[in-house]
Length: 230
Image (cartoon, rainbow, N blue to C red; front, top):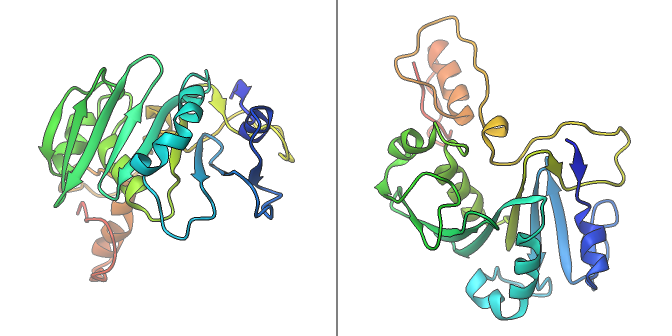
């Protein structure tokens, strides 16, 4: 990390009141700012609502905010959930695209640019989506973004930081010079050492647990995510 964008301070400067760590008790706040891994942030809007809104309902009130945020040097990707099975992906320099998923098939469609740099992709399963993106700057991004957006706990605006940036400057007991949590290649690829040959190329960290169980001859619970690579 070389630069720190303090989003709470920035939003306060822009006239918003915020709810954020370590002072997470302001029930009258305009925006909840939840920084994750320091290089990704979930922003929650219209905090008085009891059900989750999606971007089409939020856009009339909050479009100015997203335009200002997307123009910040610290922001690489801005993700706006449009439904439980779709989102918009925006960048300042590389345009925007949509990502939708249905019945475990994923479609990435550039609108006025190609934020992920992978070209149009239509109806890919999770293996095909992995193969189509693994050599890009955003490996496995279709699956990772879809799972993030589909979570009922994800934000109304999701920011993935630009290289060399993160989203926290204050309340850090130790000055931080590295980070994690963004969707860049350096943040997404994980080294994996094995003492036996896998039957297929390992793809995701979620596959490690079922693989370990398989290596031990233990049947994985049906509720366990991931697929063994042994």
